[in-house]
Length: 108
Figure 1 (cartoon, one colour):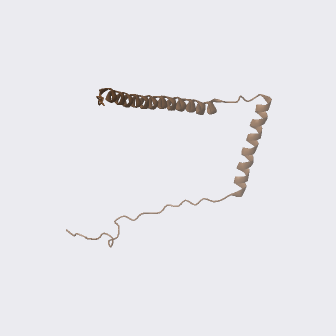
Figure 2 (cartoon, rainbow, N blue to C red; figure 1 turned 90 degrees about the vertical axis):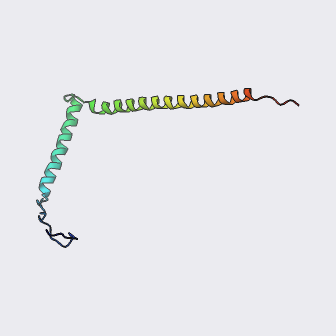
Figure 3 (cartoon, rainbow, N blue to C red; figure 1 turned 30 degrees about the vertical axis):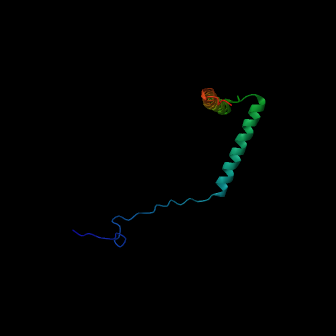
């Protein structure tokens, strides 16, 4: 049984391989894709103006619902914290009042 103190000096049992898939830049393809996106956007705008394509409001309304639920949760949390603070202040006030009432007066 061979025990090595430092594994730094021994080569790894399995070498790691670096896999590289080259990607080529094609300016013509990029220009063509950019132009296609531009034409599709123009067609969508024209269709909306003519009333042919329905406008979808669902995507934006989901964020409004999330905002409303967050505001509702925040308001509930605020009311609970405010209620706890009011109860603590009331308890402290009652303790001070009962201590004053229980203190005997010193005759003069």
